[in-house]
Length: 186
Image (cartoon, rainbow, N blue to C red; front, top):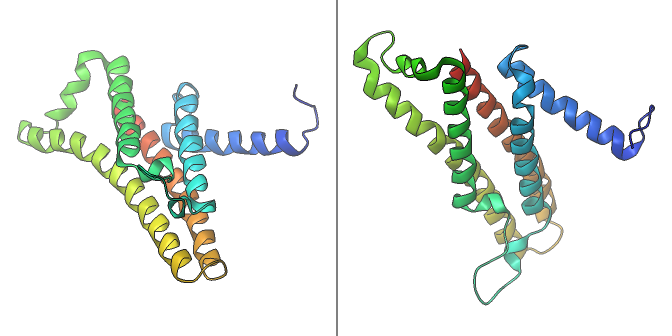
């Protein structure tokens, strides 16, 4: 139940929602942002939570007989799945607004640009997934190496930097996803 005057958890959640709404509104504009808030918000909160889970606890130090503990975004499969969801979303946005006329953008302004425009649709999910994966992997490897060499005190600043970088990566991914959707809606 929401209080008229928010306290602690409700205040935090309202601030998070306002932040996500601002991302969607700034990228998609006033006329389209409302229907995309759940998608952009889910992306942001999922990536944010995964990155923080990997940055706060050095999971790689826990040894398992098979596999390893790590942030979910430290797995290329997770980041590729998120990037493909984003790709499907911007195709859906374009097709739902323009129908099959959406594909005219591939030959505008001149048909010579067709291969480049097709290549662009393959590079968007690649860049989204590799950017997120690479940054999370680099942070976790740095913390793991420093923790195994010099336990406890030295890795703390790097862990704080990892928390900040994970937050920025969640912001970048969700902002780019919203920008790609906005581009499809133009």
